[in-house]
Amino acid sequence: MPSSSKSEVERKFLVDRDLPGLPGPGGIPIEQGYLAIDEQSEVRLRRAGKYLTLTVKNGHGETRQEVEVEIGPKAFDDLWPETAGRRIRKVRRKVDLASGLVAELDIYSGNLDGTSVVEVEFESEEQALGFRPPVWFGRELTGDQAWANRSLAVAGKPGKRFEFRLRPGEEPVSGICRVIAARVSQAAVEVRKAGEADDPAGHVHEARKNLKKARSALRLLRGVITDDERQRMNSICQNASSHLSGARDAEVKLATLVEVLGERRAPDAAGPWRESLETEAKGHREDLTAEALNEVADSLETVGRAFRGRELPGNPELVAGNAGRGYRRGRKAMKSARRDENPELFHDWRKRAKDLRYQLEILETRLPDEFAEVRADAEKLADWLGDLHDFDVLADDLAEREMEASERAVLTGLISDARESQVGDCLDLGEVTYPVKPRRFTNQLAEYLR
Image (tube, rainbow, N blue to C red):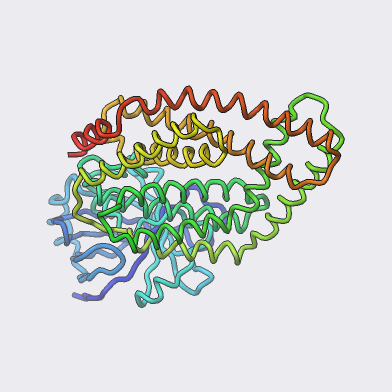
């Protein structure tokens, strides 16, 4: 019977279930089950339309070895009962891409109903590396074994709660690598969408949030990967975020000005100031061309590739120590801000509060409820400190504007009043968020991560 043997180079992506206007035929129904599965290999039966095959695959990630043999109906029927409990059903559609490649869109049914993924096969790893996903492709799943068909057949779809958190039984360090890859990939998705959106603001905001969370996760790998690699990956994420910051920063200043003015009668100078901020935001949005944004998304591929499917031995105590280090720095920043209400001190504290929130979010599936309460407090604190930072940025912007001294004084007073109230709220919440000494916090984390 016909058979084939080849080395596969593939990349896999999550996609939305309802994709309007995709070209191509309605698809081929596929039913497949697994006769044997271990860590590196699988033996699979598949019925694709009228074709019946037995396939052996070795390896995982982007490049795998595959041997496939066509089999007869009797052999298939004799073997099929042995796949009970390890089966999936889907419809596969072929979609031609602008790059000349062909995407295979799998739309699952049964207990996987509502799930769709797309795979693209390449002739070489170089071609795979240079591939620029179209905007309808979602987060990349390459190398994530929980999304392999064999895993879907046995365990079903990974829980949405665990997309950016440690999965049950997952080693902390390997899980953190997976989360970094997922966050960076999600940021790249939002960047590509921004390039085609009439109003990119929402997508830019989501991209920047994901990049900040990826950078917080990188800090948990201090001492696990080399400082050079960690700093290089952090710089790529930071630079990508900087490219996106102009429009977002201008829009935040505009929104903060509106909040400060409220319903009160604004000084005459507030009108031209507001118009100037609107013009500034519009100019930055126009700079976010599709090509420029695609280059940002491409840069993030370096980080995604470094962490996708990466499994590292890691000491849970080291991860706990890194989280504890951030907690200690946040507690110290809070005390400094209490002594001296310098905006830079509050801004530093804000960054530490965000780290605490994001890092506990990654680890929370291994932690008791008391840590969930700390994470919730850190989230609120980071938001409040963010509002405070917005007031400070607006005050700096005001200082550069030309206007009558009397009107500047009125606007400065409004910002100062809003800031003063926010400072007190942040300091009160800080005492709740950092209730224990750093050593105790770190030891508790280490105990649960072990």
